[in-house]
Image 1: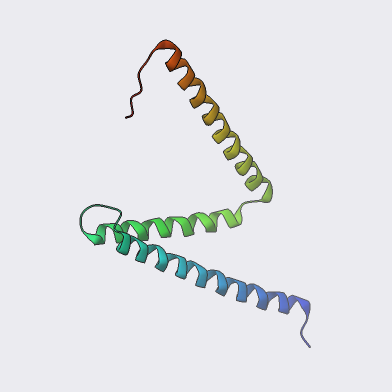
Image 2: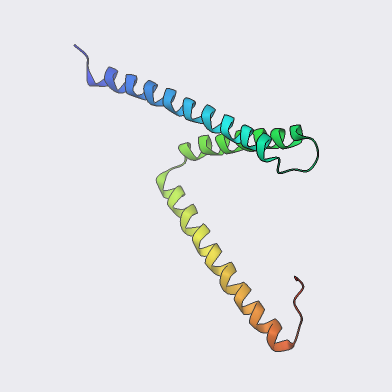
Length: 108
């Protein structure tokens, strides 16, 4: 007879294995995309290495986020949204001000 404690332990191992598989697939996909799409000028290995570093950084960030509390994650999401809204409003105000002062655009 299996107790619920040991059953939960098996499910967490299965889930850990699934997460590891997803991380490996994600990393392989990002590395292959870096090689095929070649976003960095120069040798293809530079693009592949940059994609590998990016994939590892994303996986490490995801591992760190898993340890964060829900309160922290909600606060980060709300802060990000408010920051984007604030930057949008600031950019609009700056654009209106520069037009009213007759300042030209810097970008073509």
